[in-house]
Amino acid sequence: MLDFYADWCVACQEMEQFTFSDARVKSALSQLVLVQADVTENDSLAKSLLRQFDLIGPPAVLFFGPDRQERKSYRIVGYLSSENFLKRLNQLI
Image (cartoon, rainbow, N blue to C red):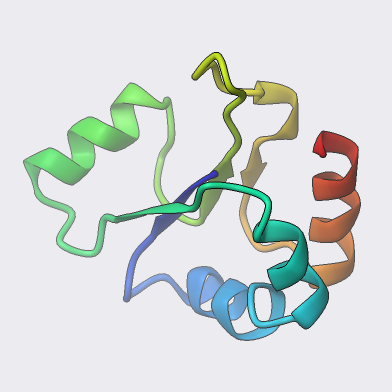
């Protein structure tokens, strides 16, 4: 799972506070390799990474399979509650 995050992103902070802190979400995520791309600086590297994945900005959560290919139908852009995040995650897992 690749999580795009920025300190200035209010929806990212909500995801951290309400979604990723949920014990059920933590348990489900323990089955995945978690990577976070901090694009707070919005520098050329951050912009390049966002462009590479065709994103305007955070928050965005991308899921990849063992073949290293993104599972685009499971892509999350914007805030998602813990309940809705778990529904999406359970479909993936």
